[in-house]
Amino acid sequence: QVRLVESGGGLVQAGGSLRLSCAASGTIFRINDMAWHRQTPGKQRELVALITRGGSTNYADSVKGRFTISRDNAKNTVYLQMNSLKPEDTAAYYCNADVSTLSRGIYWGQGTQVTVSS
Image (cartoon, rainbow, N blue to C red; front, side, top):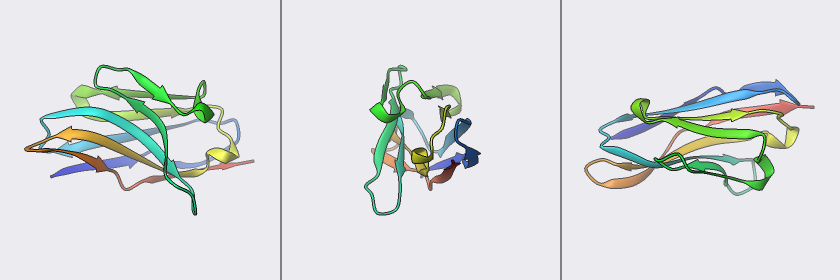
């Protein structure tokens, strides 16, 4: 069984920074793509940033230049450095990972809340 646990959320003023972490544990042979998504009440979950195992990245237009996704393959961990935060970044942030175990599947964390005050 694979488990993803996020940490690092909280309350921050507009213009501030936060760093989210997501650590995967369990029976893991290989982690392929890892990503961060976010969701606000009444809206669909949206992709914020994705990183491949080789380090290629992709970002939503709304966060380009402000957020940076990175990963540590040795630690099975993905990070999201969020700078110049805006009130509209307020959301629950979820990580997910494409994991090869005895089979292959997409796993999600439980989410961490980020609140940006104006």
